[in-house]
Image (cartoon, rainbow, N blue to C red; front, side):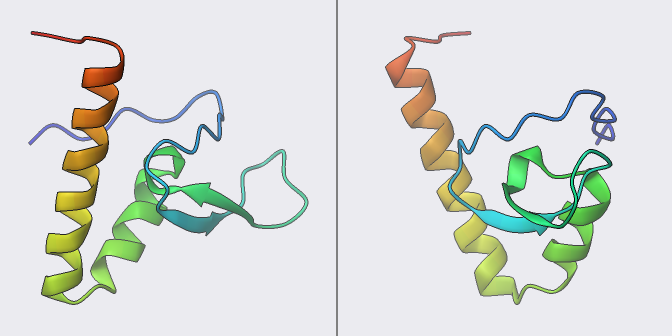
Length: 77
């Protein structure tokens, strides 16, 4: 699997609703940041701390959110 590209412009979009505390260079302190908006390093640390069942729930939740976004904007491949 290809590694994610480095985040160059920070945007907290809040699409997934799965919040992790993340501190970007422009922040004074850690802020609630959705999983998909966090750095890959933060995502890896967070996932490494999850139990297998929690990883399954994460994948299912992200799948549902992707489907909802696709439906909302009529995205087809």
